[in-house]
Amino acid sequence: EIVLTQSPGTLSLSPGERVTLSCRASQSVTSSYLAWYQQKPGQAPRLLIYGASSRATGIPDRFSGGGSETDFTLTISRLEPEDFAVYYCQQYGSSPGTFGQGTKVEIK
Amino acid sequence: QVQLVQSGAEMKKPGASVKVSCKASGYTFTPYYLHWVRQTPGQGLEWLGRINPYNGGTSYAQKFQGRVTMTRDTSISTAYMELSSLTSDDTAVYFCARALAADYYDTSAYPYWGQGTLVTVSS
Image (cartoon, rainbow over the protein chains, first blue to last red):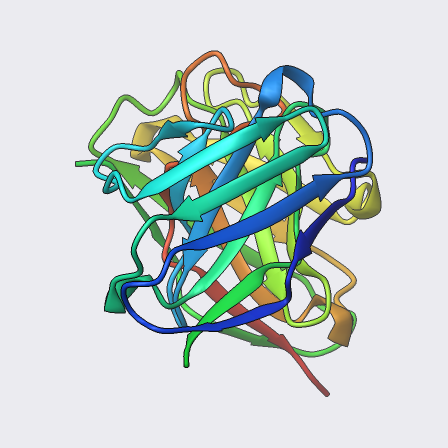
């Protein structure tokens, strides 16, 4: 199965800053079937990006995804207070689908 | 609007089984595969398997083969996940999640999730 490694583990940032999260796959992700989720405590994950760069319904355009094959990124252009959360990547190009271990974006 | 509503928290003893339900509403139940994902502090997010609500066909993660059973009742738009021979390692929040589109089968991104069901395994 494909192993996804996210970095860094934790980021301490201030509102208004720009942030880029990384997700590296142990082998190429088929058809760029890579998704990003946001999760807050006590909630289910929320789909932000699918197909590496397509925003899910209702997701603000400050969230953008990029990359291909084994290297993917999620960029938040300007952090809003509600963006402080844990972010996960997921590959769904090969079965079983797998998730990264998460990056926590916390308030500095 | 699409909603997935799961059954409530469960506390089980080692060796027991647990059955979690996931009731779908706001869309036609049968075309979209339903997947089950669990979340633990140690293993993170982990895919358990999926069910085809149209015909009941299933596919399970190798790790859970022989211990997990997924079923559905189309008359009430509800899917079920049963996990047997529970150990403390199965303590987790279990989520059901709907596939992105009707042509996503064994894998998918998940735009819709249930609220999660905490299963605690303890003697």
